[in-house]
Every structure is written in C-alpha cells, then in structure tokens.
Length: 297
Ligand code: GUN
Image (tube, rainbow, N blue to C red):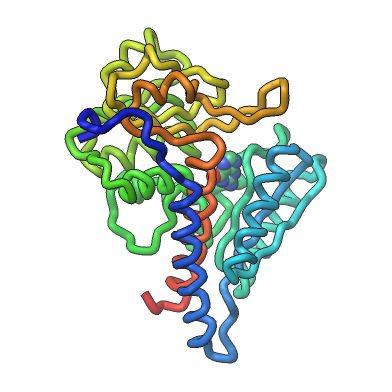
C-alpha cells in the first residue's frame, strides 16, 4: 500500500520508457527478419498543423524516437492557415495508404479547424492516439480488444503504476482535469483497474477537499505548481502530467514537486516522468496496430 512507503520515491518514467523502447526495438528487429518481401514495414505518420513551438518539439520527438527504435516515421507539417478540408483530404489519403499503420494528428489544432471532425476522420484501425469515438467507446464499454490503441498519456501512466507494482484496486484516485486526451480516459482506465475515481475539473468546488482524500492523484490541468503538499494525503501516489514553461525558461509540472515529494509516497518528476512514457506508449501502439494489420495477433 502506498501509505506504508517512505516518502518521495521517484517514479522514473524515463527509465521505464527506455526499457520499454529497448523491448520494442527487439520486437521490431524480429518483425523485420520475419517480414515477407511484399509486406510493408511498420510506419507512423505524425501530422502537425501550424507552428506552435511546443507541438513542434513534441512531434519531432515522436518521429525521432520512432526512428531510433527502427520504426519508420514521417512528420507532415502543414501551415497554420491550412483549411479543414485540406487536413481531411490528407487524412483520407493516409487512411487509404497501405504503407501507413498509425496516424497521429497533433493537438491542439488551429481554431478554425474542428478538432472533433478531424479526429473522427482518422480510420479507427490506424488511430494510434485512441481518440476516435469508436476507440473511446470501446474504452468506456470495457471491451477487451487486444490491439486497440489506448490514449498514450493515460496508458503510459497506467504502465508506470504497473511497473512500480502500485496498488490500484480499492484505492481512491482523484484525477484533476477532464480533457479527452488525458483526464477522461485516465479516469476510465483507473475505474477499469477497480479504483474508486473522482474526476475534478476547473468548476470543482474546493479541489483540496477531494485531493486530500486521494491515494492516487493525477494532475492534468496545465497550471504550474498548482497541486501543493497541503493538498495531498500523506503517502499519496502523485502523477504529474503538466509540462509548463516558467518565465525563466525552466520546465515544471502541475505539481509543486519540492513540497509534494515530502508528503507523497511516489511521485513523477517533470521532466522525466509521464512525458517519456507517453512517447513509449505511442510506439507500442504503433507496433500493435501494425501487428493487427498483419492479422498475426
Ligand atoms: N497534444 C498533447 N498530447 C497529445 C497526444 O497525446 N496526442 C496528440 N495527438 N496530441 C497531443
């Protein structure tokens, strides 16, 4: 149980992700050796619309890590004034392209493009983010689809909890943030793992009264250092999704790490916690979608 642990143990997402990526590289080598000459190698395509600096960094990282483990990847960058129709046309082409196994449209999209319309247009069997309503519906329904892609950040956090053997069943988990990228699917995954889940958001009254009862806290709000030690129950497990840039250029999470680590049993750092696991999970999802496309698994 978390409460019997010493305080402030680091959940080293970077180390766990490196282990996961090394395993995937081995799988990819095996798949390459087994591949028939007329079969295409696994490929991830990342689509970035616009020039948001953070999105540029994230998408470049995704395609670079893919290449490092032997996964083909392509970053397609479109100008910020690209029309929704042109984005949809690109996705239709990628959906129909047998050499492409995973499609990721980096979010957020420019305001003139309807995010839902675009996410709905990605073929569910190429949806590496698990954001298509079919895949989100399967998550909600608890359907056990072996090679369905789960949203990368929540699935990555579940992998961290599993890696460190942290108990989830029967625990009270408080998720702060109700985005479709993180908060909602994370609440669902924790529920599926038999946690009792509270989903808090910007309109939650007295947030601290909820977090103070939590055995597991997931902070996904995008506000620097917003969760402080006084908001945590001693021994809580703290997962910090935030990546915020401070005025002095340093990165920090949504959790005030220095104070929270004196109270938490386990805590993810920023950087080096949840972020690397998101990328490793994306790679895992791509390899899984590829294997499913072959009908081998
Ligand atoms: N923007 C921030 N996180 C994500 C993510 O996991 N997937 C996509 N597509 N965009 C994001």
